[in-house]
Image (cartoon, rainbow, N blue to C red; front, side, top):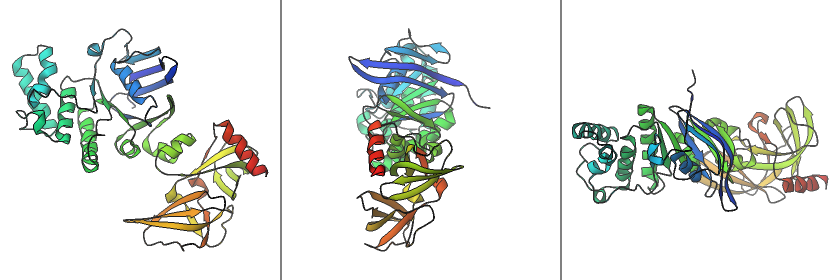
Length: 369
């Protein structure tokens, strides 16, 4: 049985003067899920989080938390708490004092405060740290204190604004696992903002990809990676090879596409001959051979091979200068500077309707020539 929407964002717009930062954003966040809002800098993801928190007001549209309209609610009246990138700990207070601060403001009895603080310290694996000052803590420990302080008030929703970006790579990966463990244990709804694709893929129940203030796609990590809904999602999430061309033949769900360097194919419903499309193929799905494969006529020259542990990354350059990336097990070496034919299983290609009209005209011209 699926859980109901705890946070509902309905047709939100946000302007700063003439700058349209968030555009007609509609998004439901389910109770108990870990949802990540993913996008590059300036896409509107942090502004969206701040509107849910109440630090910013939408120009128009509605936000509901637990079915309650947040329009007239101050930040402290909302059943949400925020963890910031900068931790925002009080430097003059101990770990205990930082975590207990919100409870003291609510005039919770001292005995209950102590029990709740000690319980949450154990939960974030900081038992015995209650007397330390922030200056005595590592970056990861400070982040855990900030999370504990946000969780102590038992919010319905925890908002996290790039909370791991200040940590080194090894600690970030460790904290990713800890955050996910914590979220599952508490069954609290997390809305997490990041620009890190790997972080989003590894932590999230669902990912909402934003670009230029708009919501491009919402889905589980596997869907976002393997079935991108737009060219932006295909190129932003992980690495991909993007071909642009025109549908030259359709036979059921088998689609042939004419591109500048030859012919490629894929499987998809709803495409018609003459349509302009983009075709996305992940590097690990690419195949090579010394002779043509049925349905494919693109050929290139191997220019570079990079050894990265168990994987070998190769670059094949097409006659038009387009670089194609392949990934294979390290023992499978391509002939350097030798010609290879490229192909893939048709079902491994993702066909996308491009949105950019300039791309349409450029591709039409290249194919017609």
